[in-house]
Image 1 (cartoon, one colour):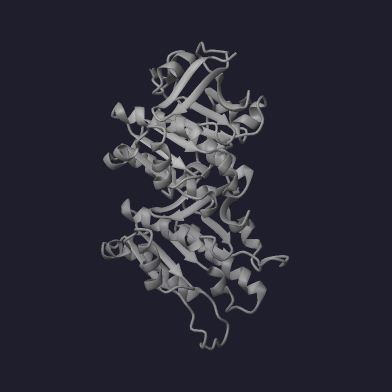
Image 2 (cartoon, rainbow, N blue to C red):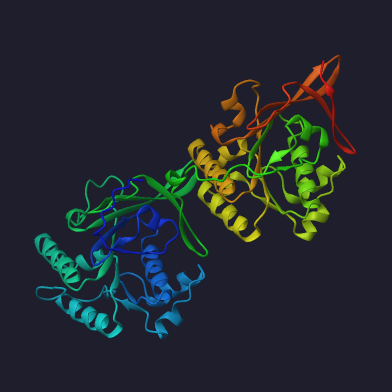
Length: 473
């Protein structure tokens, strides 16, 4: 994010999660913002949430739609948990239907002066200073002369500025293959321009926002993923992930005394732990032991599984003497399971962060980093893990992540998707054939700020749990 915001630029908070952070405070007050997007990109919802959040804060606004009926807007809003009717009754929100009857016959020189008169009356009656004009291009299609279209839009821009109205205008993006939009000059006229799109990445739908320009203000100039769902729009500015997490805390037991000794007395609070190894090496079993021990200390654990359902995990762990059913029943352990392909990385992240805020766990277990690559692209998986691990560190939550690998010595490959810089402790599990028997090996490769064992140790998974044996030969 560019830190060059000028102090004399007044900002109007949108209160949309993440957007004010990208805009370094909000939309320009008393000026015009243009939002461009294709079908399904969320233009109308951005405008509606801006006014709804403002109304909840006691700041009235007017939403003018040239495409959708007011009833449809209310129904759409209700699916996100927004109740518009109380805001309308309180005089804090007004939905104006500006739809043009397709059977109407336009005679003479059509202009928008009558529209100004209606809007001016309503602004004064409500004391409103916020306006959203949705699908402005639909209105402009009634003017057949391109020069007059521009004149009318310039007049609208000036009219709003003279009344110190903070306006958000939405228009459609050009279709694929179309060289230009009908209203390209609006990009130059508007004080702030925001582009939205809804694209397919790895067979998954992904929405993105980009601020193209913002006169007199700094702004986040990258593309930012966003999600539409209850309680509204959530933007995920991954570039804002900073190194603001707290220092590592006190030590806490892994659940295995022998393993605690190997890593200097146990894990540190607010640390990130990676358990890596090939298939069948015991990663899930070790994570389950850690989860059970944390619950025994009356702590809460969130277990994120991209590979097994709750029933499958509980059943599989019984064979190693770990019974997760009681902690699940008490609510100390929560299992969040989903196929990585079920939704985009952004939806997975929002879903997880909402649950973390509700549950306030001490431990979060992510199984596994390698499965995250199936969320669409490797970059999407990287952003998901980086944001989730960093958020947990900031909240003082200990994170345990597993990763399935084939290599033994390459740390980048071991960490999965290039997240090694955030990892404090790395435990590598191996499964080797020796003298016609399979033997399990454990090595602490890294334990930041701790004196740890540098030896390879044998370990076994029995019906009584995990047992770490003597140092391997």
